[in-house]
Length: 161
Image (cartoon, rainbow, N blue to C red; front, side, top):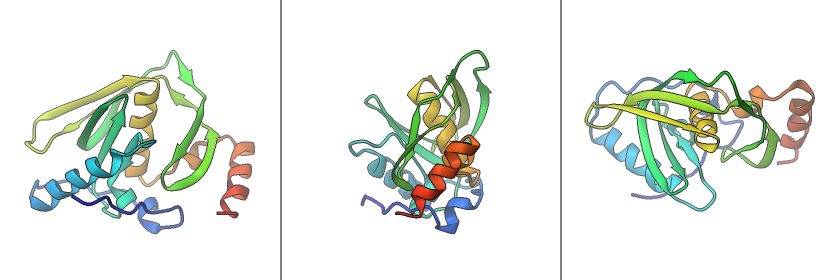
């Protein structure tokens, strides 16, 4: 499968909530293959379907050598005890990184191509990836989660892209 082009901030598909995958057909199978191939590149941690122009609820990840995908994910648990406030970036917001507060632990539930339940969970970078990609599927960018002062800086930086 080919690597797909990444949609960049300003593209309306990034701000549109994605529709659930209702039927797994050849198109959805091809989408998953494209998501996996496109995320399996140096420096890429996660990729939502709308980032490659497909408005369906699916994302892939590439964290510490673990490559995977999930259809129709929904976050069912976020750790309340610990947070992470590190820099976050996004393929759709190239070259910009800003401190973004996320839960340290996240668990999402969805399905695979066979319709079997899939649980995706983790701490640290995996938790950040889950939250970031589900935000994409809901039509949000990480920029929407920035503290006010940081968001102002981010919007200024966006104008220079």
